[in-house]
Image 1 (tube, rainbow, N blue to C red):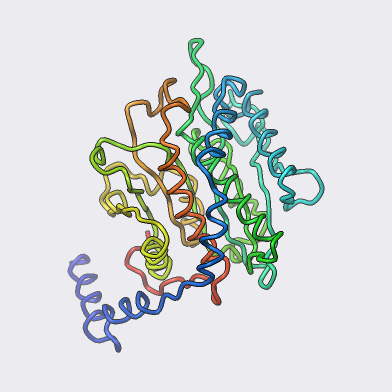
Image 2: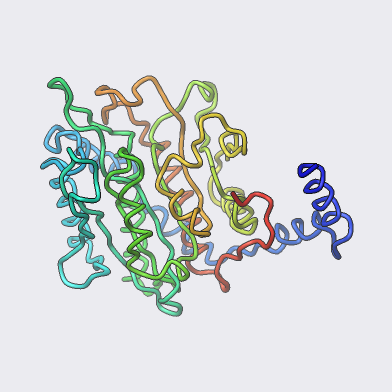
Length: 349
C-alpha cells in the first residue's frame, strides 16, 4: 500500500501541477544560457596532453611509493601538489604556505598514520562566499609484496586534471578574467579507505557547506573500458540529476557546445549494481545536499593492480575530458545565479 500511495501522489504532482512537471523540466533545459564562450575556448587550450603526461609520470612514479594513506610516499605526493600550487601562484585557503588540512591518526583505522587533504583556492571576484569545490583523491594502495601500486588512472588521472584545470583558471585570473565565485581545489586523502578524507572535510569544512554550490569530482578518467572498445570518446556522468536538473542540463549544454564526447549515464541508474554513485568522494557532499557530478571512465584490466601505470593512459582522451570538466566548472563559477536545487526531486536519496 505504501508503494501505491507514493506512486499515486507522484502521479498527482505530474498531472495537477501548473505547469506540469514535465513542462517545468523542459523549461529548465531550455533556459540554460552559456556564457563567456570565447574565454572558455581560449583557456581550455592551456590544458594539454603533454603537460598532463609530464605531471602524471611524476605523480604516479615509484618515488611516491603508491601513495598509501599515512605513509611517507603519500606525504611526498602531498608536498608535490603543494609545490605545484605555490609555483602557479594559487593560494591556500588557510593563508600563507599551509595547504594541508591535517587529519590525525585517531580518525583512521588503527594501522593508518596521520594524513592530510591538500587544498588550494582562487577567490571569486563578485561572489567570493559562494564556493565551487573541484575534487580528486590523491591516495592509492601503496606497496604490497614488494610491488608498487602506481595508481596512474586511480587516481593519478583525476589529480593531474585538477592541477591543469587550476592552472587554466589561474591564467584566466592573471589575464583579467577571474571567476565570479570562488573555486576550491581539493585533493582528498584516504578515499581508498572509504572516502575518509572527504568525509573529514564535510565534517570540518573550510567554508560553510551551505555556501558550497556544487562539487565536481574526478576519479579515474584516463582510460577506456571494454564497453567502449569501439568508441572511446565518452565519459560516464554520475549524479548530475540527483539534486539539480539545472546542473544536469548545464552539463549537457557544455558538451553540445564545446566538446564532442558522449555523456554515458549507464552508472547513474538508481539500481546500478556497481553503486558507483556512492563509491567516490562526491558522495559525502551529496549526502549533505550539495549537487554533484562524478566523472569516471570505468574499470579496466589494470584496475586495482600494480600494472596501472602512466604509459597506459590515453593522454589525448584525458585532455578532452579535462576540457569538458573545465568548461563545466567555468559555467558554474561564472553564471549569474548559483546552481538551483530541485524541490521535491524524486532522485534525492
